[in-house]
Amino acid sequence: MVFFETIVKEKSGSEIQLRIRLTREETRCCGLVTLCYVTDVTDQKRKEEDYYNLAIRDHLTGLFNRLYMEETLRREMARARGRDPVWASLCWILIISRCSTTLWPRRRDELLRAFAQLLKNNVREEDVVCRYGGEEFLIIMPGADIEIVKTRAELIRGKRLISKYIFKKNTLSSTTVSIGIASFLTTAKGRKNHRCRRSSPLSC
Image (tube, rainbow, N blue to C red; front, side):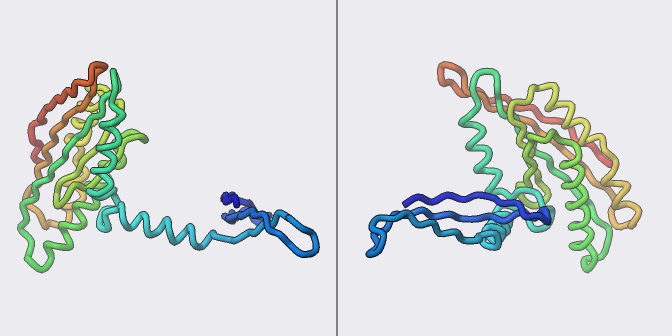
């Protein structure tokens, strides 16, 4: 018995995902024959993808969540060899509010979504942006060098989008962004090297 899946494109341009099963069965009339069973699993695959995204995404910001972050860090740290270290930037945003307790949760959510979008817009395609928890975010940068990491960190800290976005609502008195960076590298001899650097806070 053989199983495999394939994608077929219709004339309309839409794609259908098929699961094909080949099996050999004994029949009275023809003896041993090969039968092919074809099942449309398009909806099932879409549901599985939706469930998977729910499991690895932060519902507020749309970034990857802490579970996916930990899995990615373990995978990238295992791959880190020779001159290909894995870098990580931890971004923490401190928010001082002067709005009412009723409005504050909604304003905070708006700010976190805006900050998440800022991070996504200022990283490389291969970087992984995650929400660590609360007001903390982590950017995983496989194979980057120190200059790229520092440039990205200073670029993010120097952005004024957050203050422009939120201050027009007159809900915050100040926001402060702090970024720390660290690297992990396994040498040819199996030694694990760690390197850390902390960026000074930026008050917006």
